[in-house]
Amino acid sequence: MIHINEVIVVEGKYDKEQLKKITDAPIICTYGFQLYRSPKIINSLRTLSKKRGIIVLTDSDRAGFRIRNYIKQCLGEAANIKQAYIPAVKGKEKRKEKAGADGLLGVEGIDEKTLEEILKKSAAVTETPLLSHVTKAEFYADGFTGRENSVELRRLLCREFSLPPRISANALLDMINKVFGAEEYRAAVNKIQTQIK
Image (cartoon, rainbow, N blue to C red):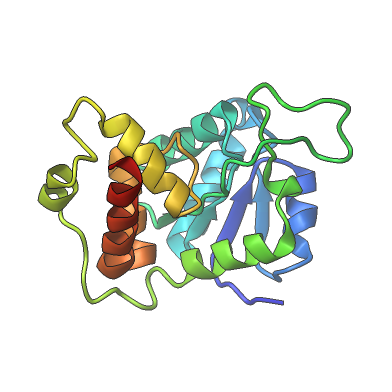
């Protein structure tokens, strides 16, 4: 059981049940798009963000990213929000008859070991600052922004870090700097450059 001070924000009750197997952290559900109609949920998240910080852990599909971005927009840049991402894995949850619109597993379908690793990295973001980071200029020089093939290169980089391919360039760079660091980034870039030659 891992102990996390922050509040974890997930989409639904099955996501919450899956996380309760590995952590005793407080977990809040947005109940999908009910978040859009419930100022109470947003106000709760705002308060919790100030008191303890929150970790947003939504599915890697379109709906998950919409919810993630809505929370960030409502709480503002100054809020204490950490982003945790599950990998984009094709499949469907056991309880469902068919896969979701994007055909990806949600938080409830990701194995406990992977979820534990994701949460440990996210929870450690503010506790252990990395000694080295990747600048926007380096990210550009390596071709991950501003180039014709940047989107495809970012997808390859996301795959190396087991991040969803839908993540924006800025969010990807932020995750690299807060979770992985410059050394892991450079190793991933070298591997990608070898693959595309």
